[in-house]
Amino acid sequence: MASPPISATQTATISQPSPEITVEFDEVSLAFEEKQLLDRISFRLHHGETKALFGVAGSGKSTILKLALGLLKPDSGTIHVLGEEISSMKEDQLFELRRRVGIVFQESALFDSLTVRENVAFRLLEEGRVSEDEIEERVREALSFVELENTVDLYPAELSGGMRRRVAIARTIITHPEVLLYDSPTGGLDPVTSNTIIELVVKQRDVYQTSSLLVTHRLQDAFTMATHYFDRRENRMQPLPPGTRSRVPMSFMILRDAHIIFDGDLKSLRETRDAYIREYIS
Amino acid sequence: MRWRDVLSPTTFPSASSAIVLLKPMELISPTDWAKQQVRSVQDYAILAARSIAALFTRPRYLADTTQQADLIGVGSLPIVALTGFFTGGALAQNSADTLKRFGSLSLIGQLVSLGMVRELGPVITGLMAAGRNASGIASELGSMVVTEQIDAMRALGTDPMKKLVTPRVVSTVFMLFFLTIISDALGVAGGAVVSDFLFGVEWHQYWSTAWQILVFQDIFMGLAKPVLFGFIIATIGCYYGLSARGGTQGVGRATTQAMVASSILIIMVDFFVTRLIMTVFGP
Image (tube, rainbow over all chains, first blue to last red):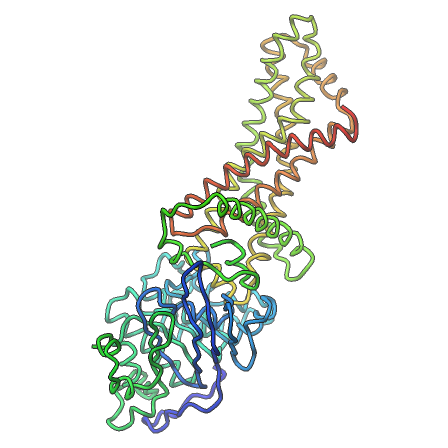
């Protein structure tokens, strides 16, 4: 992978987010028909940070991800991704930027007529810049990351829901994106499989320091991410020792009625006095 | 959600399917309905224009085009051959009685040949291909829309217009041209079989009159129509597929609409093209 892996030595090596901003929404508004979905929302995602997005269904969480990728355009406001203002970019211009930003869709969105190998290698095959041997190697590498090396010749319909999500993650990380967008990666999965997916997200965060926006309905997933780190030596997720939680580059954002009502770290979330948020996280 | 929202959000912000579903049975004013229809025609026109424009920009998907040509062309061959043959046969049967009354049964080859090449061959082939392929394209693309595969394709840096729409348009136009020729030939052959076995028209006489009656105008009309029909089938299928919303029910609706709309358009365009060519070249 492109980014240097962190040292395997304990939590002290988990990096703090640098001041570099990877995603910035500034006064962004969007309405669908007569419903105002986002109303002048602003937030920033720093390099290496993972921001978990919460909110009731239809509150605009997934829409934020699609806006960040240029799949949707805001009615007003500006969106900067990796230093580029994307809200005024044309589709052709966005294709190059999307090489640096990956998204894992809610239902995986794997191409059902293609094998796992072809799905994971899709972008590389389309670009045609890489040799067959290198494509094969990178597909193996990406599938190895999600521990699904033995599924290369299977079709998505032959995989379980959890396996499809993992293949979707492999397809997303094969080009080593600098920003990852996860749309409910654990939605509809059993707790064990959900934990496996979250472990992969934590691994991506801690090993490759990828900036991420994570939409989820499961608070426990985000809390797990805020209280765990990926131990490369053990090749598994481990709880953070007491006193080091604030060092995890993890933040929370809650949407309600087209506005952001909370944007902060785990400590702030726990200390909030807002009745709605307290009820939401209880 | 309209197809333009699916493919290019630069023009219009999208209406998500989830939001649309919040108002499933809402009555719509005549003005809004009229606006929707105009907007649909506008969207369709833009999709059709972009499908052609994509031919002149890279990347070009030759493998996808070939695959679609196989699916659309070779896959449609049996139904086109059968319907062509039996249409020619039925035309001969219907014409024979009338021609007999005037003692002109020997002209049956001319009548079947002209009818098949100018009109029935292209239209029957177009309608068969519309039933099979416009609906197939709409259901395939519609499924991709509702499962976010189109969004995934865009997120992975591929333009669905170039990857999905243009190959289908090119292959349908190309294959329908040749399918129509096959349908014409088999239709005239069907007429020959009926004329010979049921009405005793000499085989050689039938074929020589059927061949000699055809002039440039007839061939031109017969081969210009499938080009237009192929374009209609593919673009209508893509338009309704990419406009699909509301899950599997929406995909089913898109499939039906694509077949109905393409069939109606084929008949309408056939009328106007016939009139145009007759005006230009004479009857």
